[in-house]
Amino acid sequence: MRVAAIYDILGNLPAPEAALEEIRQTEVDGLVVGWPDAPFTYRRASEVLSCHVRGCSRGMGYRRSMITESTLDYAEARGAIDTICAEALKRGKAGVIAVCDAHGDLIAFARMDGAPLSSITIAMNKAYSAARERKPSKEIGKAARHPEKGFDIGYFGDPRFTGWGGGLPVWKNERVVGAIAVSGLPQAEDIELAEMGAATISVHRAPKP
Image 1 (cartoon, rainbow, N blue to C red):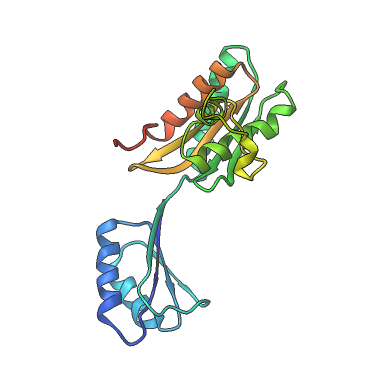
Image 2: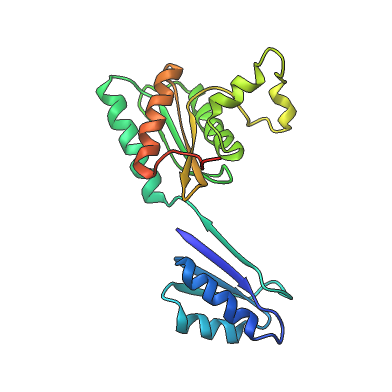
């Protein structure tokens, strides 16, 4: 889902018109219009956009500000988890699966029967690490263990960062929109199952350099 936010430039009507045109071309799913000078923009947004438009009564906007952000929704997260659980059951295995948004905040979670209790926190931290660093959690661990350039992972200043494999960022339109992680199986299987889950949401691919 893509959501945009706009704050009016006080007394400058052409500015919100230009912003609305930009938003229209972006084809967002929702728009939040900020105050204090929002009535004009709110009315025009409702006229020219087909998405859901909502007013926001807090905050002051003195210049145009437009933010669009792609994210995962619960249905996508749930679908990825269901795919992973089904495959794990076929293999006679049990694991913990976590799906988070681009900020590392949890969207959906599952602990299969018989999965290790320690994997609960590990799965969430793998997803958090992959989302925050925009890279597989295994790569974080590999960099930390580098014989010459290695570092104490504690240098991140965040105890949730982990370098165990099994956490993968999920990409849409060359942006990280979240992450998915599996824990409780051998690392190679954690990664394999996470890749299967990510594939149900989008192509797991970073933008070309």
